[in-house]
Image (cartoon, rainbow, N blue to C red; front, side, top):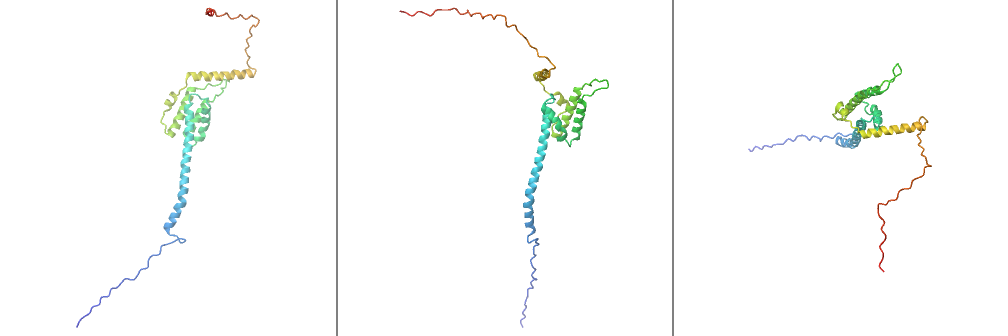
Length: 214
């Protein structure tokens, strides 16, 4: 008797494939791509505007600092006055700089005493205060200069000082004449005196022209 064995292979039940989750019929990867396409350019523009704003603020601070430090020996220069008036705006977030500017302006203001005399300004101390203010500005901009170095290294040639003083005196005298506060000096010369003719130049002897042969 022959025994027959039959092996039956039991196959597991088929598992259905997972259906990907979709939102509005779009897969998560597709949504990520769409968000990147929208947010990417906006973020790039905002980043560019942020860097541009920082660069503009730094350029404004550099102009104020450069105008003050380049004209620190001539406070009457127009750029110095303009930069001095810009300090509170450009360095608004630096309380130390604004406080030093206020101290400097308070010091250079002439005050009248009770006896009627005007108090003289200590310009050496004013130069110290200005140098300290420039030192604080330089620290914010990355320049490591001490206030002593800033004060002592100012260059103002004597010739420029003479020209500036002459120009100021010329304007003051001209205004005084136009306002009738100063006379005009007039020099009158005697024109009746005969004018002496100029002496002839006899340094070169006269030589007659040579005769032609006949």
